[in-house]
Length: 213
Image 1 (cartoon, rainbow, N blue to C red):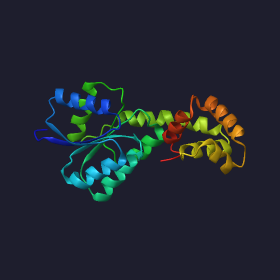
Image 2 (image 1 turned 180 degrees about the vertical axis):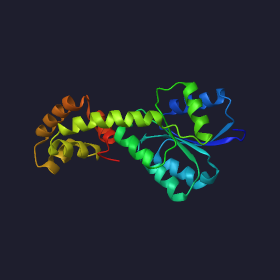
Image 3 (image 1 turned 120 degrees about the vertical axis):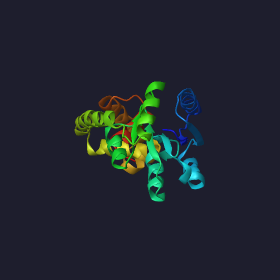
């Protein structure tokens, strides 16, 4: 990689963006962070203003106003040639499968170290896809998720989807024609079945297994 790699960094946490920039600055990769974005809306704005100049997009999956798929769809719609590397701690098997089908070039967990970040980016920009770990994760997660989903009733799956849609307890109760107290009881039962501790974690589960996108 002799030419400068022009990067769009999409990550909602400022400290995470700073860490990636520091890692890149300490590496031997010739690069320029051309633009940054903390939301889908900001990322779409950057694509509109400098999309053809971007060589690489480092993209968080979970963003405040949507997901990485919204950004990927815009990249594909515009016909941009930028490579895409997903940086995420939340994406599970079903989501990873969807991302791979969308043409993502690589994956990095938010827990990876500087050397691995550099290695993945070098490999992707050299024309290789860094998806081996994602393949293994898909097989493992989809098997576990399938077993978990088999234990859930249609009503429980409906509840998970409604939680992920942003409705509050009262609104969910109206949608499901039950009392708010019943919804809270159902959620407590779901927490135990799925292995989560809060509604926010339940929503992340919904995204992870592909109940919502």
